[in-house]
Length: 67
Ligand SMILES: [Zn+2]
Image 1 (cartoon, rainbow, N blue to C red):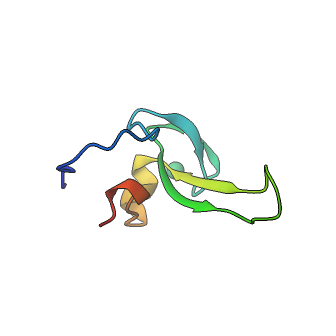
Image 2: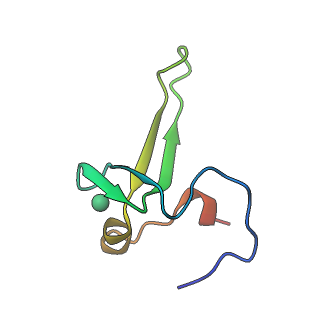
């Protein structure tokens, strides 16, 4: 398990509680996986979060941890 060498001041805390889009339920420790911007106005964007078990199951890499 790789530790990020730099800590950007993002809002995606490892202990964030939110909706996991993979198992369709609330969970702690969700991370932002994808952000969609439909571009047709405010409120149309969607953010996809995944919890730790789903990240392991689906081999997901959080946006913030990608190169
Ligand atoms: Zn999940």
